[in-house]
Amino acid sequence: MHLLKAMPELEEALQFIEKIERENSGKSVYEIANKLRGYTKKGYTTPLWNTATGYSQEYIAGEFKEKLNQEYSVLSGEVTDFGHFIAALSDQINQPGVNWSDLTSWTGDHTSWAGDIGSAIIVYYSKDSNNIKDVEEALSKFARDSDYTADIAAYVVGSLINSGKHTSISQAIYHYNTISYAENVRAFLKKRLGGTMEGHKLKNAANVEAEIRRAVSTFIRSSNAPDIFKSVKNLLKLQPKLELENTTIPNGTDMLQGSLHFLNHMVRKGGLDSLRFKPYQLAGVPWLGTVTYEVKVPK
Image (cartoon, rainbow, N blue to C red; front, side, top):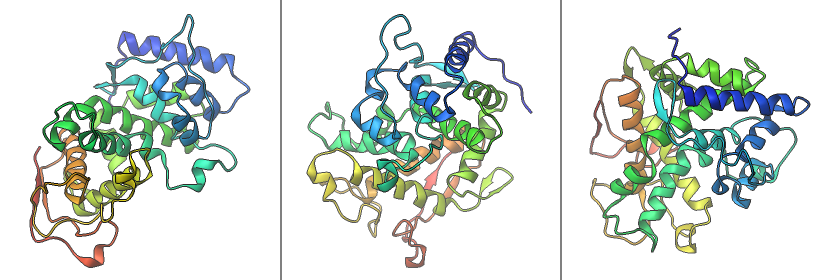
């Protein structure tokens, strides 16, 4: 196991998390994770977040205001938006009983990577695009590497807790931090996206891309975006040719750009070989076949 030394800001955050765990020793890990969400920022304690996580948590001001809202912490050797990580983690840990979010299409993907990608696409098509010229620029601005590292950390740390390997958040984070980010990326690819690996090669890139595209399109359809987004059909379906459409609503090509953007992060940071494959025409329906063109994801 590759041991990575915790940076001072990470040590400080972990000590604070341990303090909250001691003060809430009678509560479940799920409850503590959502309590920690209150120490990030107001944007992670909105009614939408409370509905998504199934836990109503108010923003906590005072002495420890935004104590865990560290945008640039080093976790598993990579710069990570720690506040985003804590917020996403609160929706990854299994909660008891049935909640409203369990009865919808919403999942922990949508408060992490699928939400980051989908939000970037929505912002580009909104009136508040701030002169963003294309979807790629929106992705670079709103789905940064530090966001993706937070998303992957939330999934892997959540898995460590849900599997019973760790019973505390702080210990699960310590464990995650002892593993190189490349290994954590590969674990995420295998466990969440169904990736099959052979050495440094991702063997089923088309399947992985389709799963990313499916989750992002679900986020856009389920989001609080204007009605124009909710009425969009065939977000999962790709055009016969890879070309950008001049439309005012998101489409399959946008979803493909988003999934390739995330795949590029994982290829670069996971030490994987570059990818070249033909995407499925319709995500989740492989029997319809692939498109005629290839896409590339560089190292």
